[in-house]
Image (cartoon, one colour):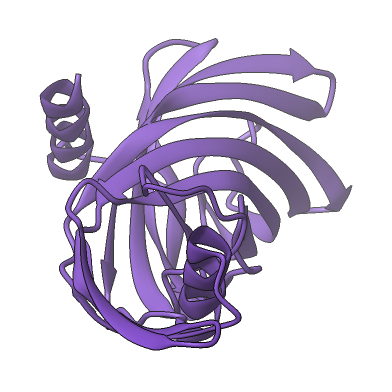
Length: 234
């Protein structure tokens, strides 16, 4: 399924696309066990695609997020906090859209897969040390670690409401739930204890970055004359 998802994303990025409406939107990502993330303006373009019929379309796009913290999973312990620190994340969805027309409004039901890649990655040592202290039952712990980042992928589903505001201008509200992950092996050592201080090494080779959570987009766009409010470049 991972290969099929990546092939689908690549296909949508290479086929001719069009955008009849132009505007501006802001997308925000609220990750599970992480910190609120915002787009890096102006690197966001979504809603590019091809109409298959009056009711169906396929769409893609890209958003560059400034992520301030993400959780890790598949560790030897559970920790509900962002151990992966700040990064820039490129997010590219590929989705099938069901378009429901309701008078001047349009309701889109969306689902598909996505690719993402985090770069300029850091660790949140405050949360890592806290997780180790809880895991070991120590009163103090200080870690020194290294990691490697990999591209990730996942699935998403959501809905978008598009409606006119004034003549030739419209607005949109979109909500998606993302469920993705990427390999994030982390290794190193930590020093700490209670009364006696000791140093231990660790290698969390199966650790994965958890790119799951809620994505919310709010947009305003200019319609170029087409009756159906489709293809918002933002």
